[in-house]
Image (tube, rainbow over the protein chains, first blue to last red):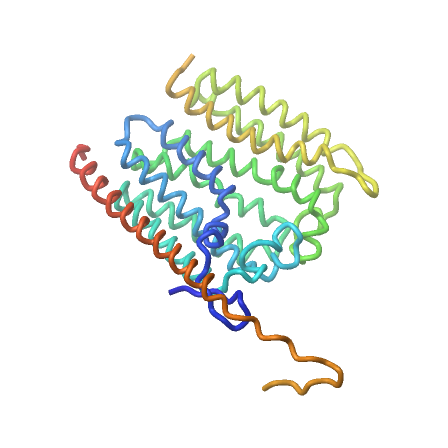
Length: 303
Length: 56
C-alpha cells in the first residue's frame, strides 16, 4: 500500500484528501466543462453512459497530469507561498506515492477512453497527458518565458478530445475551439503572473514578468488578447457557429480586450494592489465558461 | 549515524506513534477503495451494455 511519512519515522497511509488535492480539482473543473461542451456540440447523439465515461476519462487524465506535475515540481512549489501548502511540499505525502498515483491514473484514464469511446480519442488523451508532463512541465516551464504559450496546447485539448470521443474524427469547429483556448492561455496566465511575480521569481521559474519585465508582459497580454478575440469570433463568419455564439463571442471578447487595454497600458509603483490584473484574471475564467456554454447553446438552440 | 550532542542541547523527543490515526486512515482508504471498485464494476457493465445497444 502507498505510504506517506508524516509522523516522524512512522509510516502512515496517505490520506485520500491529499491524493485528491494532487489532481488539481479546480483546474479539472474547467477541463471537464470544455470537454463536455466539445462533446455536446458535436453532430449526432452519444449514448449517455458512453458520454459520461468519456468525460470521466478526460477528467482522470487531467487529474493524472496535475498529479505528475506536482510530483515533478514539489521542490519549486515549496519555494512559492501560493503552492507551499500542497500535499508534497507540506510533507503530507511522499513523492513515490504521488508518482505511482499519477502514472496509474493516467494509464487507467486512457484505458477507460479506449473502452468507452474510440482509439482516436484515446490517442489524443495520451498525447495531451504526455505533452503536459514532458513538454510543458519538464522541458518548457523551467527553461523559457514562452512556457505557457506553447504549453497552453496541453490545456486546449479537452474540447477536441470530447468532440473526437463523440464522432471519431476531427472537424474545423473543435480545432477552432482548441485554438481559442491556446490563445486565451497567455493573457490568462500572464495576468496571474503579474500579481504573483515575486513567487515565481523566488522559485526561479522564468515566467514572462520575471524575465522580460512588466512592461513587455503587459504589451504581450494586449497583443494576445486581440488575436484571441479574432480567434473567438472566427467560427461565426466562417460558418461553423451561428449568431447566438457569434454575438456572445463578440460582446465578451470586447470586454476581454477592454480589460486587457487597462492592464496593457498602465504602469505600477510600489504597493500597487494590481486590481486591473486580478479583474482580468477573474474575467478570463468566466469568459471561457460562458463562451463554451454558448457553443453548446448555439448547437442545440440556434437563432 | 547520530551526531554527537552539543553541550546544553537536549535531543529531540521521539514523536509517539498515533495508532488511532493509522487505523482511521487505513479504514477510510479501504472504504474508498471498496466504493471505487464497486463503482467501476457498475460503470464497465453499463459501458458494455451501451456498446451493444449503440450501432457501429
